[in-house]
Structure formats: C-alpha cells, structure tokens
Length: 381
Image 1 (cartoon, rainbow, N blue to C red):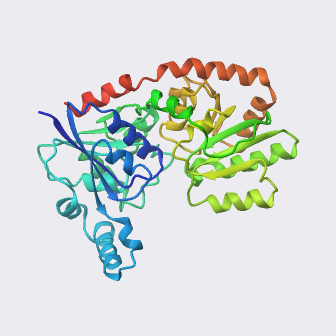
Image 2: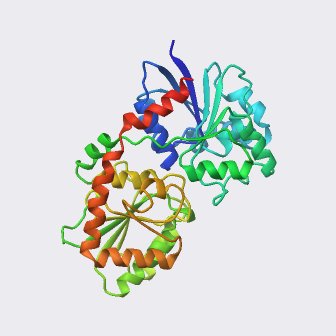
Image 3: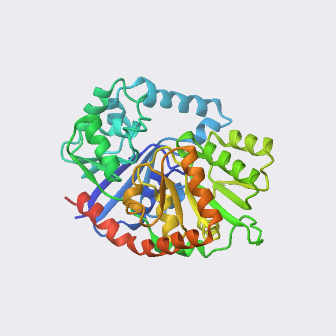
C-alpha cells in the first residue's frame, strides 16, 4: 500500500520553500507515496509544475478576488475572512483541510503550521518543516498570540524538521522542544544543469564585463537594499561590473527608484522573476547572497551546482553549505564586510578563480537521490 501524504503550504509563490516542495514532490518515489499538495491560496509560479506530478487542491481561489462578478468576489472575501480571521485553527482544519492521509506535513512555518497543528487525524504522523532561523528572523510572531501559543502549536507535531542545523537549534532554543531533526533541502542537479543550457530569455551583452548575480524575493530579509548601495559605491570607484538581481517582491519599486536616482541603469539590472534563472546564472561570474537571515539557501546550492563562485553573509546554513568557508567566501553579516569581500573578489582575478574551482569541487556533493533518501525514510516511518 502506498503511503498517503498531504503537504500543506500557504501558496506556491516564487520563494525558496515553495521551490523546495516542488523539487521534493517531483522526485519522490511515486511507487511508495500517493502525494497531495494543498495550497491555502491557489496562487504562485509553481502551480503547474506541482499539478503535473502529484494531486493538487486549494482552499482559496485567488482568481475569484479579481473576478468581474460581485458574487464571486464576496464569496472569496467571506471564505478568506473565515480561514484567516474568524475561525479558530481547529475549525479551519475540520471544515477545509483534506482528510484521510497517513502523513500530514505543514511544509512552511507560520499559518500552515498553525492550521495543521489542529489536526484531529489520530492515525496520521504529523511533521512540521521549518525553513527560517526563527531565533534571528521571527517573522511568524503575528500569526500567534504569544510565544507560548507557538510552542503549543509545534508541540503537537511528531517531529519538527529544520532545513539546517542552525534552523533546528533555533527551534530547540526558542521553544524548548527536542523532537527536532535536520534534513537538507532536495536539489535536482541534473534539471538545473539542463535548464542552464537553454537560451536566456533576456539580452545579456557579450562585452567581457564581470557579471554579479543574486536571486530571491525583494524583501528586507534578502538585503538587496545594501547590495545595491554597495554596487553604487563600487561603480563610483570606477570598478567595471554588472549586477543582475532576479526576482520580485514588495521592495522592487524602492530598488528601481534608487537605481534611477543614482544613474545605475547600466550597472544594476532587475529583469523580474524568471521561470528559468539558471541560463542567466551560468553566464555570471560571482553569486552574492546578501541576506540578513536565511534557513538553508537553495539558490546558493544552485550556484554551486553550476560552478559559480559564492560570497555570502554569515547566516543560517552557510557554514554547512560551504563547509565553514572552504567552498565559498563567508563574511560578517554587515554592509562593510560584504562590500569589502565583493571588492576583493572582483578586483583579484586569481582569488575569484580560486573560489570558482572550489565551487566546481563542491557541486559533486549534491545528489538528488541521496538528499531524498532521508526524507522518504521519514515519510515512510
């Protein structure tokens, strides 16, 4: 008999956790597992990929809120209020969450974890995935009334999965819980390499200019505000380079305004979210993670798989990914340290080549089969 597994996530937007879930369900053994992904909101760039390989359902149809029909918009608003504002978690679970599964997984911290913690399925194993360092980036504080309510929610799970040792340790320290285990994110090296060989969808000049790249959501956590300021400083100092920022998010207009005001249009490029960022990434010379906090960076792993040298701020998961700086440069998590590190790498060809060689050695360590084994073992217990 196949194990029936339910993954609950808030949406399938272009974030790291959503990408990880997509990779996981694409590569899970379909002979052993019957998988359903339930998204609270039917929105996001990974919907089609999810639907093509596993069962998919949702609670809120985001298209209805844009409908020309007043009835559709009102029904969406009513259901949204019921789920997010009016009903307690136990009633949201009872009324809206699919039933009859052997394993129930809240795949992202926050609202999905709160709802799944109210499960009345006594037979199901219950797991909660945590993708953020909640001690240094406690972004879920507004989901719960108090820290004790958070702890009570997580205590309902058989196991809490942290995506790095730092994330797992943060959960233990924050909630005083010990039913925590680290499982690294599955990454499909073959699909990344294959996608990188496709033509780019955006024009990139072949002028020999050094290309820097970062990929992520345009939010404060990712530190792109300070990265663009660093780009401005380096440009003023006469250093020749381009910075490509792939992604989207609420801070996009702020970045675009800064770029315009500082005449950086030929230096900093923001083409938006790309379904295939790898064909751009492979044509770049340095990957930069400027994040103020992380869980376990999927995109840094992807850069290493493509043999791109990496510089990153010191945040969760980087010591594990880069073996304490052996395979990439880790700098203190502040503006000046990041600026100094980038400056060194882009003005010293030998140093940049050294880290490129290190990245190419490190990429051999990422095998989707090996990364999936402990996840499938857990789901099959």
